[in-house]
Length: 378
Ligand SMILES: *Cc1c(COP(=O)(O)O)cnc(C)c1O
Image (cartoon, rainbow, N blue to C red; front, side):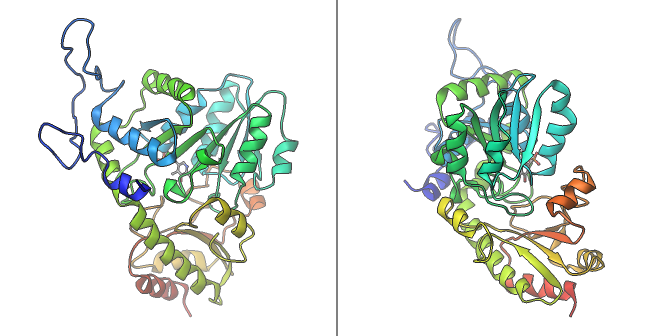
């Protein structure tokens, strides 16, 4: 079965007793034991819940992995994975990274003895140059957020394997519909399910998939011991969202490409960051490892005065954080998603005060173009 079919069929044949087509929500904290020493397979909902199990199996299959796990947020998922490491361990991380991940690593986990080096992972030689005796993993985002830099997943995972390191890929931007890092050699994929997988800006969730069982057993132990699990109602919402992943993404990327081409010609726009444009530096590499370029695009405007103007004038597009939903959102990374990255570092990386990020939705693209053009002014 193709991915789209499998996602649509999630949970459909699960309830044999009633034939319910929609996966039931098992809103139960605990489950009766048939008799001493026996279990239905479910004991207590932190350890396992039927609605969550169906979601976890669906994401594992979609990513081509062995085990899937659902968490209460993307950050809860990343936090749980980071328990795989011990004080003194070192990780190499993509430098243009989701701001919340940077905050977790720099403001919390360094205090527990983990070390992080931020590298432009689109340059594998730069990655290799930062390897240390205590390096244990690569943590990659590709495309990066918000500058859309592309990392060679196969190359990075190959390098990691040769040094006995884990490769962890945050696949939030591409989703398994476009990109499957485990098939390219990564060991762990993590998602903010809040974004494309949920797809409707109505849910906060996180997901993890491991390539093999052994790593899956470890993550399962941490998921249950730490307890940052996703509740059954939200598991159901995420299952529902994932059913339409394919058609949403197709429309989102079509809209994004149209918008990118239009913005390219606008006199107030300076630069576009979108992996679907031929002049994007990672264009070829990206399309060699992904089936699409997605619905995220960033652009800089020529004058800083335009930023507040655009954010105030947009009518259909919402000025809001987050991404991946059916509604188009515009974000100002320097003051929103990336505010926790110190200004000098931010500027040096190119996350300037004229950079805006669009998460393109599924609206009629002509309405989006008109909205942006009136906001930019003539
Ligand atoms: C949003 C996001 C996260 C964090 O996920 P939450 O669900 O907000 O906790 C992590 N990585 C990326 C790339 C994201 O966009």
